[in-house]
Every structure is written in structure tokens, then in C-alpha cells.
Image (cartoon, rainbow, N blue to C red):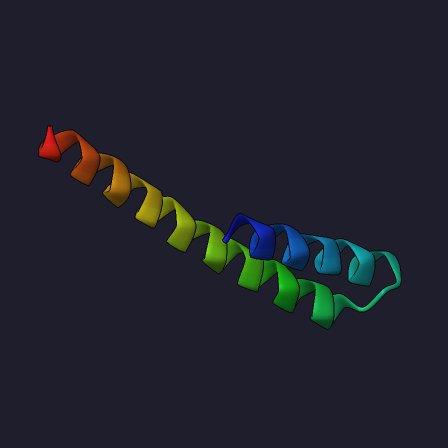
Length: 53
């Protein structure tokens, strides 16, 4: 998942440099959504690991 976040952030940066505001905004939004999903899954994984022991 981190790979997808980085890919979309790079797409957003490149699109912003070349002046494609809509594409940059869309890629940034997708990267942000994937980041929050990753963060929630990380926290759930850590909590489940703590409660198993």
C-alpha cells in the first residue's frame, strides 16, 4: 500500500509541475485516502497483535 501512496504522490507532483491542476488534485486525494486506509489497518494490526499476547 505504501508503494501506491508514493506512486500517486509522484503523479500529483509531476502533474502540478506541468500545470495540470485537476489531475494533481485527484492524485493527491487518492494518495491521501490510501494513506488513511493504510494507517487504520496498521493500527488495527498493532492492536490485534497486542491483544493476542
